[in-house]
Length: 578
Image (cartoon, rainbow, N blue to C red):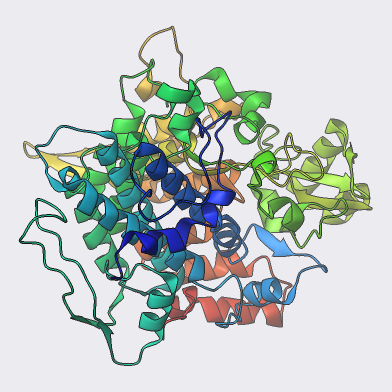
């Protein structure tokens, strides 16, 4: 029977051999790695092992998300060392054979989520009973529902349309057979669960079903998974710190705040600004731990870079954890570092550097998000005085003089090298963090307007405050707010400078300033291309994205070719399932 316990073993038995032990000692007591069918899910520890296996699968998507989200945008480009797949992405000549275009890792995660969802429904039917007392199985069920929704959402942003993977498809082979099928796909062994679970006599066993391949666009994905997240989730996130006393585990698994962040994102893309604001405000105004996700001085000025070398629950909402000591590594340093043995295949574009340099952003730019490295020696970087002179010259558009100063230096993405040794290859990856949600909420407030007793209420001032000083969050002198720009020492944006002070002009101006701020704060974190897509769609102007991205290419024929190609919204997606 397909959904017998050995099904899930086939997916996870190898993963269990190399997944997280813990931040300190996650598995305690020790378990045998070879788990028999009868032993699987006899107690909570087996569930916990499978849970960590899911995060190992999610980790495998990090490089793909960063490359497709950044290399197709305006802030990242290739070096002469780039391999053929990266060159093809840079040129928007992406075929199904491109390793970064493959949906396989999405399918692996979705199939594993499908499998565990069915196991939980069968063994612990209380997870689908809204009135039953909350247990760790409900918390785990919430994690898996979130993870699957996140996978579909990211996939549809990349591919434009994605196949719906029926929950009866629980192995990667089944999914690949289904996706490659030309007509109908017969799924001959399926268990349909009654409300009382697997052992209820009303449960239907061995039900033959015929699956039609259905491609879901963004609107369908949003409708489907907003419904699941709102209606099927009682609670999210197993509290592992109770057992291992390591509070960082709260931000290393899907949790309540990450659930709000995901739902806020989905509603924002759906255009339901009120519901998006509701979920983002739950994070920003939460009353736990002294309003933990508001931007105070914890990561201000020179401490901003610590966001990428430490874990802290005042900034990190949900972070994917890598640790070389537990064989959890990624290829980010190999992609970005110029020191041996790394391959240095990607680097910041000139347009990317200008986003920081034109604002004279000293705390998130050179030496933080990117750096100038000489001869692969990470101890030989441009001095602050040299950096200041480069900024000054480029602001004056004297690029020739600036290039003389940086001659012999490699321009590198530095964000994933902060605090890392040459061979670490285990930088954390932030799925959601506080500053991003602040910027999301600022974007919502820019356009959110509604009628109240005959008057139109707007929130553009709140959006401005989020950027400048966080004054709309200010609660008491015990935790003064700084805002996204104020946290790194940038002066506030002044809306009064606009000659035309009408609402539409304010909105357009703020929209552009928020996009610039997203680039400085979130550069190289895999979000840039989708930010450009979202704004272009809101403006109903595909040329906005086309012009932004084309600007990083050599002037002339290549730039014009890319601009014309991206002016067609259809070309923003990888058409893998056509």
